[in-house]
Image (cartoon, one colour):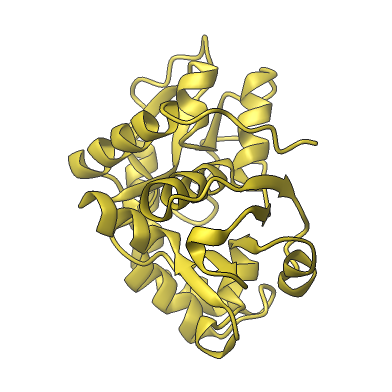
Length: 239
């Protein structure tokens, strides 16, 4: 959207998905990349074809625990990704029989594990951690979901606020996504330094972990996730 043929098509503001959802809810933005959990709750219209998903290990959604997973009673969560927090609840409940009390915490692994049995780290802070060298048990929640269901996990989608008609815009988002995918090496080189990671790690993340073009299996996976979420009681992470 900044460098391809779509530059200038939209007025852009850069926020994390949870903040995008809040802007759409307040009518302060027309379109945003929003957590999958917010689509139904806010009555948003999905712009098909693009988003953020995985078909296996996602690498950027990691749950670390200092106790066996079935004994987790408290979970400190970085709540900047609302979908990831709910995914942690689903995986722990379905695969390990654990239903921990959740609370928000800044993404600092040692401090989180100082006050809770387990810690959920997402995004760049997770990518900067190497699970192989950390002395705690670790779950990659993307891999857990895909192993559990056989379907991809969708974390975020492009969507329009209630009352805004996005019909006719899907092509612009798909074209922009493909332009970005064609320039992944440039993006990795440009973004890795400010994000304090190696260009190789950034490149591998796009190449091996995340899926940015969403097809029917991704949509089916998202439906399964929302059904699983509806089966659980909601948790307020603002406390």
